[in-house]
Length: 227
Image (tube, rainbow, N blue to C red):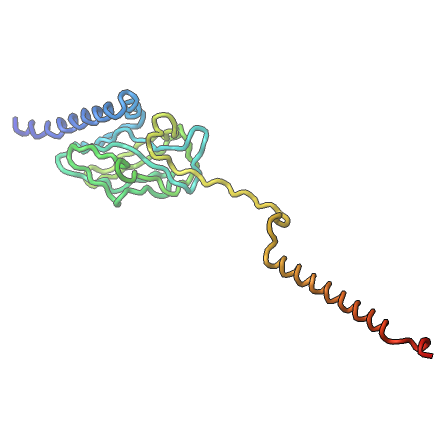
């Protein structure tokens, strides 16, 4: 019985140590500010799997990521189970058509914090089905191969203040400006140059015909003068 208790306490103690390490790492990289960011996301747990600081990174204050675009998901995953587990699926019903997991699945070693998006691409909401702004919430369902599925009501954090330390989320492309109507004021193109040459050539031929007619009238005497 005593040995069983030690085995049961092992994963829990390892998870506690991982959390202490996680907090210490945040303090070392930014002190109270980074710990504040750590506390702003949503937390959840499922059969020894801990999800910490789950949030969607939204656009800047007052801005919107339009439907059809994408948005990143950030979180920390800690596996407190006795065996490794894999995150195999994430869905966002009512918000995105799919959620991309880098490599299609994410392996969670025992008691080792995993941070998608740190040193690689994050989880990503793909093809949004609605506009997304800071202050909203997104329902995410995380499915693990061994532990099962847990739903997290996830906040959308605006891209401001401490969150600007993350890569900027997708922003809509600028609207194209309408081109002005009418003829350009720059140098004439090949077609206009060719038309100008033809017009000048026609004027030159006309003047030559007029000149030859005048010469003929001067050279040929009229019947009255010859008589």
